[in-house]
Length: 121
Image (cartoon, rainbow, N blue to C red; front, side, top):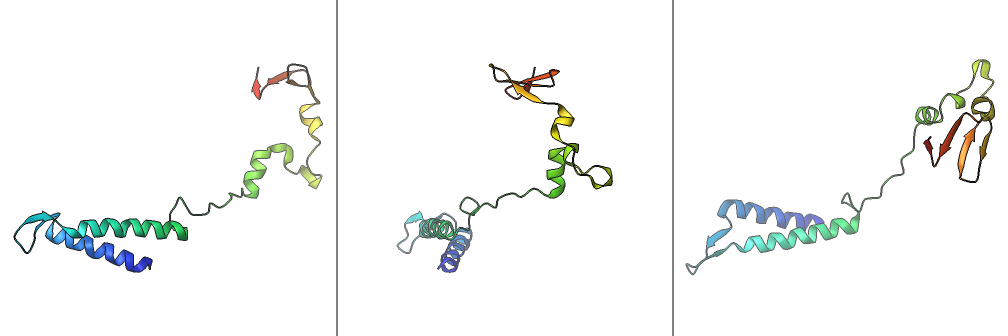
């Protein structure tokens, strides 16, 4: 069905290129090329079928991006990297100290750096 509709679209496009948008009909009257209307309907039908089959970028299923192991390790930073001699990552508290919150929802790490709503203050 889609192939036939595409074939109709291509045939009409070829005729329009050959004869133009305006043609002289058999009765001698100048008018629009009827292949333009047929081509427009075929194009609409093509898009409808392609949407139903998921063949357009908009209707295509989008795959869930899966980060690679290297990207995960990069995002987690050096704390997640195995230490020398295969001991594994050190505890988080030993890297950044203890994390506590106060009434203003500011987080303090070891009392040195404070973070308010994700921004360094």
